[in-house]
Image (cartoon, rainbow, N blue to C red; front, side, top):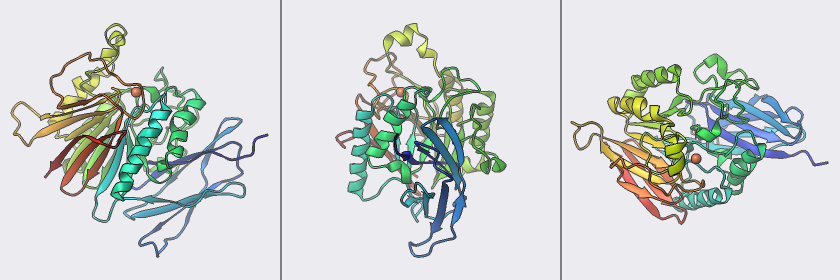
Length: 397
Ligand SMILES: [Fe+2]
């Protein structure tokens, strides 16, 4: 018999402003674990400790999932947490939130699915790059396709949780903003979507729901939401599930004062509005050119009308970036940037299927991006696995 142990050490997701969703898993039901968290102001003062009893879901006889929502963390710069019970405890983890000057550093990745070896190389390269800077990211923006098949428990372990653990365990202390891709959904897109781990945004807009169970086993959940990151506001959309509700959310968010008053306005959505590389056969003959057309035909018009600065996508497995005038009559400074960052491991897309005549940079290899935002500047730097810079742009205002 196997010993009872952690199969997945905690992975932290942002859960709206000031809240975090934490998921972990053990190989047997581990008594009554507790999540304990507390804040500190200056490494000396420690605030009072909060103890949360997590929700429990038995996935099968040796996958026992626990989830808890931590918060509100208000504007405290550091949160500490640990999981403890009489059988199994973790060490203390620290989430370093925004810097005192309001700057934020975000590691941007997408499309690691099915290729854990390359994903490990991408993560290791990013760790080395941040180590050289002597600053680690505050957040990871994952723009979708984290695993190949959501119904295979082994895919979750071997393609997402284990590579992240083996590459330094960013996920214990660096919250993920998760943008769902086509592989992160049940193919039927049904109400009983069987995503074992990614139900972190269910109920995000209802304060009452923050204290209730994230999702009942077998019920569907939403991904679209928005958060503030220092001087930026980011809207997360679910490209796979266009709906009246999501369209209404997008319009209302674009018109909100939080979005209009943000210094930098960002949208993250798995399928890019303008795709150029794909499998030519499936593109033409399997209808895949029509996947996500609503992103270009409906959403992109709204992005341009409402002053979106940067649209971040994955889906296409290579790197492209286009910075163009927002509209026909725009001034030189009034631009929108489309970035495709589908290079965290998945097999590369090397064949051109369209030419939108708009991309400034095309790089056909694996990569990741460091997105740094402070009060007056947004800096975007794309690196390959050898940690060489393959693209850079900034917005200063
Ligand atoms: Fe993908």
